Structures are given as C-alpha cells and as structure tokens.
Image: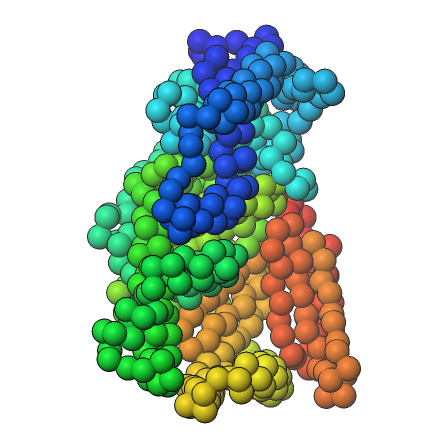
Length: 500
C-alpha cells in the first residue's frame, strides 16, 4: 500500500521553486551565450572588464532575479496534480489558468529524470508522455524520489489495467540486470564517434562570433607570431596553408574531445534492466534519466555502427515510440552493446526476424542519382576553391575518392525485406552501417512517391509510415512498390493487432 494518496490534489516539493527559478535563468543564459562570448572577446581585446560594482548593474541583476523568483513562486502555488477515476489531472498557470487531463489509456511512457540542480537539492522530475502530441503534456519538476517512484508505479499499474493485451497482463514481473556500460566502453564509444558532427557544431559557433575573433586575433598579433615561428613572409602560400591546416587540426582535436565528453556525460552509468515486456533504461551524469520501454509501444528500431565501432565490437540500439517529446527520442538508445546482445534484444522485440531476412536490392538508379547529386555538390565546392590558391584544387582528388567509395558502399549496404511480419531496411556508406526494423501491424500508412526521373524509368520509392519514424525503400520497380503496398495494407487490415 502506497504511503501517498494521489487522489487528493497535491503540490510538488517546495524545492520546486528553486528548480523553476534555475530553469528560467538557464534558458535566458543559454539564449545569450553567443552574445556573451562576443562580449568576453571584446573585453579581452580592450584589456579591461566590466565594472560589476556600478549601482545600475547591481540593481538590474537584482530586479531580474526578483522577477524570476516571483514567477517561480506563483507557478509553484498554482501547480497541482491528482488522479481521479481513469484520468491524471494537472492544474497550472498564473494569469491564464489551465487544467490538463490525460486518460491512463493514452499514457505512452512515464520516466524520471534529474538535472544537476535537482541532484544538488535532492529532488527528481517526473514526466508523462502520450502518443500523438508535440510536447510533454505533464512534467512535475520537483518530487522526492520516493514519491516519484510511487506515482510512476501507480500510473503504470493503471495503464496495465486498461491494456487489452493479455500477454502483457499475464507476463511475470521478473527483471534482470542485462547490461551496464563500463567507463572503458563509454570512452571507446566516444573515441569512435562521428566527430564531423561536433566539428560542424563548433565551426558554426565560431562563424557566429567570427568578427570578434578576428579583432581578438589581430589585437594579440597572432598572425605575425605565426609567421615568425615558421620564418615565412606574408606573401608565402605555405604560410596560408600551414595556418589553415593548423586551424582545422585544432578544431578537429576540440571536436574529438567534445564528442568524447558528450558521449560520456549523456551515457554515464548506463544501465539496462531487461523485463519480459521491455526494458528499463537509466543513464546520465548531469541530467539523469530513467525510463521504461515497452515492447508493444515500440514503433521502429535501428541498429547502427561504423567501421571503427565494429572493429571494437560496439553497436548502438535505438528505439522510437509514438511519444510526445521528440527530443526525448534520443534517450531511447543503448550504446556499447556487442553483437550477441544485439541479436538477443532483436529476437526479444522481433522474434526470428534475423532468420527470415532475404535481402533485395534497389534499382541501380540509386547509384546514378547519388553520383549526380555529388557532382553538383562538387561544383559548388570548387566555386569556393576558385578564389583560393591553385594548390587547393588538389583537394578534388580526396573529394572524388570519397564520393566514389561512399557511393559504392552505399549501394552495397542498401537492402530491403518485407514479409508477413516485418519491414526491414539496411543502409549506410563508407563509414556508417544501419538496419531499421518495423512490425507490419504498426504501419499507419503506405505512400508511393515518384519523381519525373523515376517515372521515366518506371521506378518509385515506397514509404511505410509508423506513429513515429518512417521507413523508406528507395528506387524500386513501380510494379513491385504497388505489390508491397497492397501486401502491407492487406496485412494491416486483416490482422487483429493493435499498433501500440
């Protein structure tokens, strides 16, 4: 028997005032981070900082802090939640009062998370997500862990009571610790990440404050010192090459460590508990999260790796659900798994799928299309290279080699499979490899698209839509696309299975 009575309206912990206040301040600070970085560079350039003792500055900071504190208190006082009959109710709002009700049958997932501030004041956040919405409908920012776990258990019990799937109702509640990521595995995962994404993020940030960086570099006479180190004159092409290579090298090093740190922080203490009807995943260093993954609610599953990860025996398993919070989809993933664990979990969620797969290839047109798009990209790149010294045109050798090998492996790895139970799509490129899985009865719609170029070749692309992500089979014969579409629609209509 729970010590908490959730049928009576109750507030979150009084510590929620601090959480609401902290989140508001963080959002404002996050929004002005680029402007703040630019100001720091300006102060470094001028050799002096702002005078923080000025009365106007102190009064402004205090006024903003008091404003956010008042808002936090009002939000706390007007925030109440309770259970009544078959619904979870939430009341909130300061001026515009709002009451949200969610039936237990629509609850998609209940998860507990804890950011750094919540860890410091010893509270957790509980979020309830439902299918078919664009955001988390209910999020309680400050509960004691005991109360949050009790509420989560109560909600999941109510959801089960309304679930018509007898297999889930009869399943034993046994659970086992299936996987726990070691620090070594997380570091290896970080080292073998796609560092190009981090490079692009860092590069985009630097472009945003380019003018201030330029003034700062000029103020410390970095270019003159650089030329002095290599004893080259200002007209030397080698100076330009060395400077740019050094700059790119430095950004790559920063990107490498950024990827490693991000992987470690996001997946710190990654633990997977295996249950008869799904998984319980918990992870995170500064933002801890604990969520349940139920087999019946999984829409698509993706297995991914790359050449280096595969050599290290590392695979990633990512799930999607028909959930409200799109950002939260990123948390439904497990990194650091080995091949056998991937096979075991796939067999749990998609029984015998690996034994049934027959790999069908798309039309060779997919290669021509990829090469044609890359040719246009190469032309755009060369327009930029035209204004640089002629030596930079030699980069085209690397570009052409990459395009050739990437296109070859893209076609080699791309395949599709459709049977009475599953749709499977494989793909990748020179570096990455992935496979996507979808159960037929979870298909929401089937769409056939045809460009003017495909029409001339009697080809089409077929997209199977689920309640979350979709799977697209590219560039197959139009007659085959129609046959697959009719087959899937027939199975969906004839099978008496719920999509979640």
